[in-house]
Image (tube, rainbow, N blue to C red; front, side, top):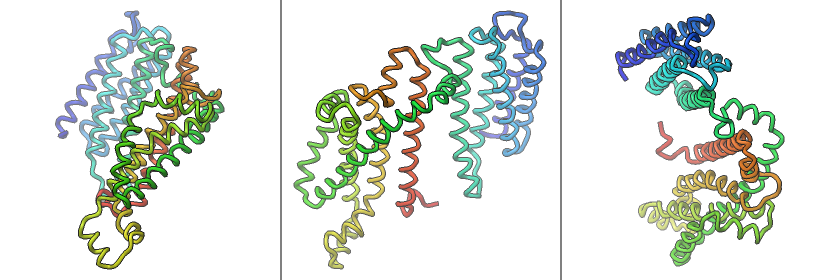
Length: 374
């Protein structure tokens, strides 16, 4: 995006903010921004910052733009505290919201186009972009739900979900331990470990690989809703049945990726190891496993999401009186959607954190890989 395009788009945001001053905020025609000193001042301040952002150098324009976005967001959320506006918002309310959203998108775009020379600054920018984008999505979700008056039984606002999340921390922790630590993590270790060990054996004895891959493909195609009740009958209602489901789900991706990684070593490298008189164990440790590491971590990252999904879905088919899947199923039947979204938030945070840990371990282990070279 060129400087002229950026300034022109911000000018549209400024016009939108100023045009909203005389428009009604709700169905009551007399309710407008010009009759409210604080929202009017906030709107003018945000419009001034958007206008300044279109004229300043890149870094200062981003700072001014985001300052205007913060003011615009705070203004719209404050207006939603009025019962006459919440659930009955008119065009005078939505126009500054859209202008703020446009300015935020432009600032995030410009931030993404920055190319800092300092590595620390570059990492900070790369972290800030998804955080800012996610914050704007949550803001629009909050404003849309409250502005249109969406019933809580259909879609609770992020604010209501956050309040429920904070007030339900003991229950959420018990559900987290049951689903993530006992069921998912145990099955993840068993499934990935078994897939890795079988891949080593299948790589050593080719006929095993040819025989196991079709079987593994068959098992991986089995639906969770089909194997979960069977595992419950075999291992009971507690976490071992969920761990068994997760182990089955994660076994095949690890097997396939590890076999592909072990076969990634080139002929020249293998001939070199043979010329040195290296045995199979030495070749495995010095050549095959290092070449397979990116593939192995790829399987670990894939399984980090599959395992969590499998553990949650398996809890729908029989579990003790705790667990994320159990809580979602029970509270959805009670129409307590704020609790359901709190559990979904917990699952999303835990899943992202676990994926991040695996990604950090990958970076520390395979730092030599070309994808990490700067």
